[in-house]
Length: 335
Image 1 (spheres, rainbow, N blue to C red):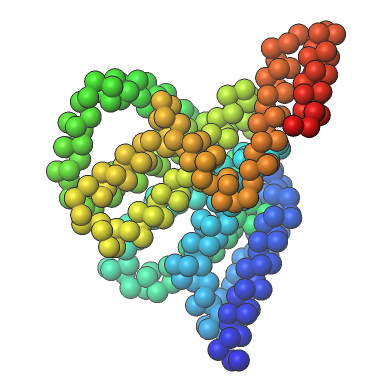
Image 2 (cartoon, rainbow, N blue to C red):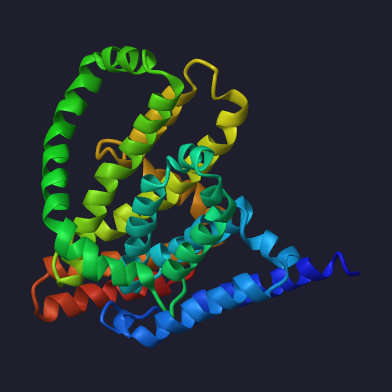
């Protein structure tokens, strides 16, 4: 029974965290600046680190704990946000992925740092867990705070430049693919060592998507760019990329040395965001939504999008009322 107590406590705390994330509205950027929430979080974090028994801490401050709050919970909540009719939750979760994606990319070299500084390695999972928790929970909503205070004003112009330059190159990439010269790029990629290949895969999956996601978030929070639903597209991408990254991170321990492994990861990554494929949307609709049990919600969101498209294309008149009335009758008919 004593051995089971830490697991019971961990399960209770995880359930409480999931409940808070789902039921408590995420604060907006301006509300996130209320210092008392962050002071309270810091106090509770220190209390947890210094008071809670190590047998319980070890269940949280580990790769599984970081994976849960930094990836698994956000993936599921992002899927729910995408299929919901509400649009603000798309932006809120996209802000989370922009921040956590940047954090993950910048800390990709922590293994090397830990080898030279054992003290960092000893406490790294504690630091990583608490940072991701601060970004995640609605009371602090650190992702929104960092986006509005740091990312948007400081990195927004740079992100817009990166986005425009990369999108200008995508047409060239499309020409290369259609012309059959992709083997040249692939051959060059194969000449790299394993660490360099991994770095390229992660860079391709994060740098441009972070820039494009930042622009999409900034445009949406400014009240613009809702017609192209770029925030929803990039939120869909981050959900799919996170799963791809997890698969790569796990499988590379077993098959990472097999020639072609990172090539497959790179191709899958590019497939997710290239406009010609829209792979993230394909994977999301055909795999993730059915697995998460959100298929009906996705259909309702599609109906809402059709409604908006009709409202934009049909002028204000009795004709619009007649069209919507006919549409309602079609939906009302059984079979």
